[in-house]
Length: 260
Length: 250
Image (cartoon, rainbow over all chains, first blue to last red; front, side, top):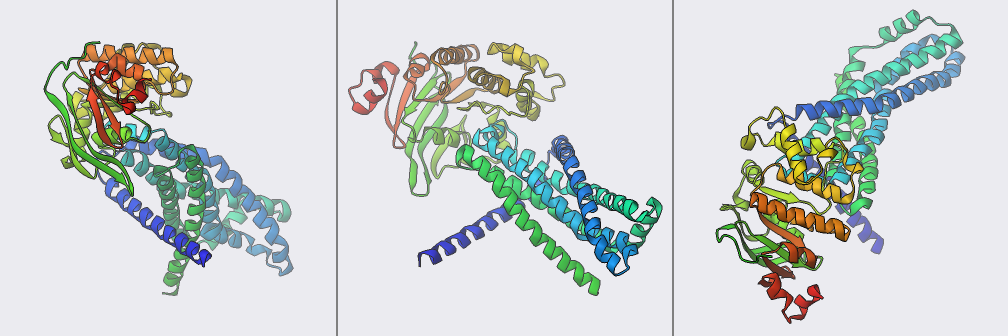
């Protein structure tokens, strides 16, 4: 009986959190269009987020490209379909692997960073100090960060995809002696707007989710310094879950359009 | 210490202030008047509602009922812009200094200046104002340092400079000497006193430090269970035989 109550309580808390997050998102849209625009802070955040994640995204993308090609090669060889490698790699990376892996990396790198930064600002009263000095901290700290993640993630995904496909080409070049021109010719022949556009659109939502959850967890951080760690940690966990849900919805919606 | 109230024009009036967090009733009908040029010390044990009261006063927390009038304006009736304008006249020194740790000392001081264009206009070169504010607290040489490079006392003084840069009429101090060694605490107190004399500001000082109250107060209020328990000058309270009052002065 006790465990049933615990489950109900957990579910209630989960719904409460979803409600609060929705309210937070609503407040973001309300504040985002108000003046002053805080454009300088937005650019600063774009620079920091892009700059800090670039190397990680590049290394991960490169390794994914390498590993994916190395793992798939023997199977394709068995069926005599190695020539399909560029098409297969590019479509799977562009449509799915690139966006989701880059978003998960950024959730860990950027989302936790935002959660910890805003959390520590909350517990050391810096957010209150900002409010008292006549600055809207929600607009200055939250709106700029959410916008920065929303606009930077598609760029990072594009960069990560390109590096991953390049990694795949290197394997094909070494193992199959495929030229750069031939490989990328096949890559671009295989890709259609129907692959690029839905995956690009969903990366905006991924970016939005990373910024939103990171800011939400940090902005309402409680329980002192322990709460800062908790904010960073729960930002990553919650965002990762949300990313898969968004991905599922995106694939589902894209599928409906394909059927049409 | 001169304990007379310098001017009898009220600048902050709080009536029957109540604030609860769920079942926890933090403020239970607190009343207070701050007069122009006065230093009012509010003492009380931890959890007695001092910090909540001061946060309600500046609009950082919403009160449940009662009235807070700052310079004739009812806080709960102000919209965001009006509240921001009022905040240029009310400085707040936080207990932990609350310096923005991603900014240098200069940027910390420039931050409020660049935001309050209504009061000061658009200032192209903020350096003279920043240097002047830092000179007031004796820390002009720290202008390019980051907050992590400063000691606790220096942080508190830079925070005071940041508060002063907007030239407020009222300064709220939340436990200004907590966490400092006795010598640095005394330096901060003397600094607060000199600032009060130089700029004729009115101050509310939240503390449980009796030395702080002795040096700076014109008048004191003892807060117990979210209500005014006793009010008077430092001398009056220090000779009180009430055990709750005496607990602070022993």
